[in-house]
Length: 159
Image (cartoon, one colour):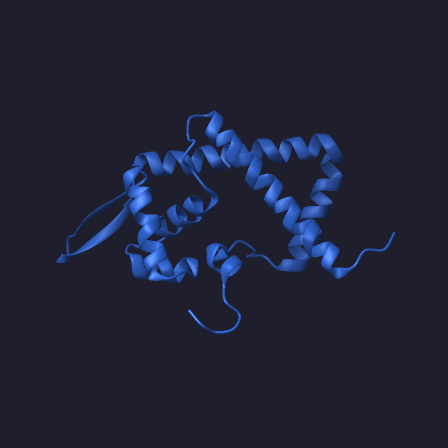
């Protein structure tokens, strides 16, 4: 049976969604009921140097206001802090807390477990072949932190 290009895109999105939904559910089972996929992207971006709302918004391709809302949630839940910048006392820098790094670690562990489930379903060789083909098709740096903004971007050019 031949599929369309749209079918392929939906299958790939479905695979992503399945893994993310299962990981979110498992994180909740482990006591992190308040973690959402966008929080992972934001925490990773902050850990990589997006240390204020402007930079975080740029990294996630969302507005500064959307980034500020995400920051407020992450602070409230103890995943990030806003500390004085040692070089500029007027500026506050975002930093990931130990709890934030623990959530990332737990998430990575869960994704490894989910990958193992896929190995049991289709076999190691098939999954490795799929991963190899996907790497060939999407390139070596397929992971982008701007996914939250990309998924909701306005293609018409307005903000």
